[in-house]
Length: 156
Ligand code: THU
Image (cartoon, rainbow, N blue to C red; front, side, top):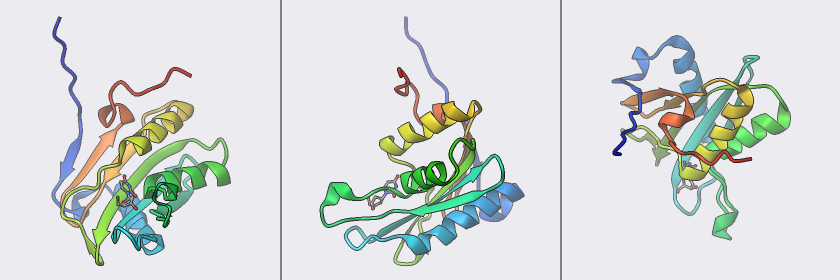
């Protein structure tokens, strides 16, 4: 039997159209770009995680001469949030990408490994993670990692 999956997301044409809380978290992700260490790709990614108690933890991509040793912005932010605020549920994450000081025109889209990590913290939180994929123009928002990563591994 053929089956079909549908994903739901919202598209905004500009940052000013976002609900205030999303705009604030996106601005935190933009601010996090300052912490990007990307001497190899020169591609900067900023992320900001908002926890259920309102705390925001920022992260940025970190590269290394031993290439696999680097880490994406999203996981840098999520692991820092979990390490510094253990057990506090994740509510939302915003991501944004830039090159040479210019925000990209298309929404930043997390890699598979970051999606897997999001899925696990979402499961811990017990409610859908709000995801903001930002840019200098178009922004997507999604409610739940399922829309980014169907059939996620969760057999623990
Ligand atoms: N990168 C992220 O920070 N997040 C992603 O979801 C994908 C890629 C980083 C890794 C590397 O430092 C640079 O972007 C280029 O791949």
